[in-house]
Length: 422
Image (cartoon, rainbow, N blue to C red):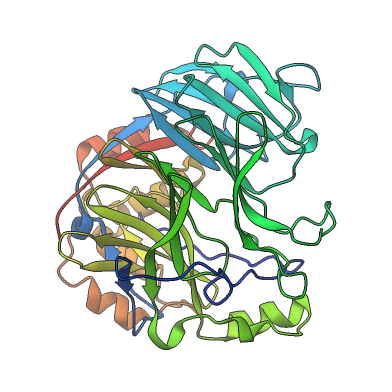
């Protein structure tokens, strides 16, 4: 199913433009991801980038309902799900979606939290770690949900990752609750005893006021990838060295720091929304691919870069033509060589209405799907029709089985997607 994903940029913050300010030099080993000549309407079909899709309904129990998934971690056959705002919980499921347990409890005592802000896996000790922003603490639990310890890290930050040797990589970003300090750096790597062992990306009080984004870091295979907000560059941190790894070439749409100089918050975001600038939003690296999203004209685009062929596929209309209806969201994770996203049951109303209209009017799913764009103020209908001419949107029985097995009040359905060479 199509996901019309647009982001509302938060009007109480300002940007961190690192492309010109990072003080980390580029070298000849940087991989360029070419995205010049961006289109305002671009269809990305599942069949272009995926071979198969597997549905994993997350078991629903009355006490363990997920309001919204903010982060998914797949590790050793388990799924850890973070819901920051609605249920304010961290839940653990097995590889088939069966509920195992809640990690931690609501409260202010040992092993409790009022709202979990981020999660990571401590691979060196086999723990799940929860960041509690209100306490500036990391809570460590084993995979059976037993509380191990609390690390009172004493910092506000946007997100973190536990590295293989127990180090803690964090990205601070601007925080309205913590006054700027002279010489503050946004990217820090701490020891297990909270000693700063590496730091980079200077915070500039004249320019930097944070972003509305949640996650700046991605960790796998002993390598931490980091990209500060409003950037065209993804950096690699490994062996206490930070080097540029990917540079996105948006051509004339490359963002630059002159956009925000001496402007107030609202004027900056107004200019950004009206400009032609594009910037990275999120990313996940596979051995042969880089999955990413970027923002252009206040619209979120999804993309895939093939390291083998150097080809890039992207779109702001993502359609599951492998099955025809159910599609994922912008929240993604890695499960071995597969990509994990989810279908939100809240969208079931749309799906079932589409089914009913097809049966009543004897139209194809494709005809009904296209109708939803007929009077769009955002997307070009003629472009969509032209780019989907060869696509077949024919749901299969197992997709209907999935749809009919859940209600809009159930937990989300995970989607495990197998990438293909393109």
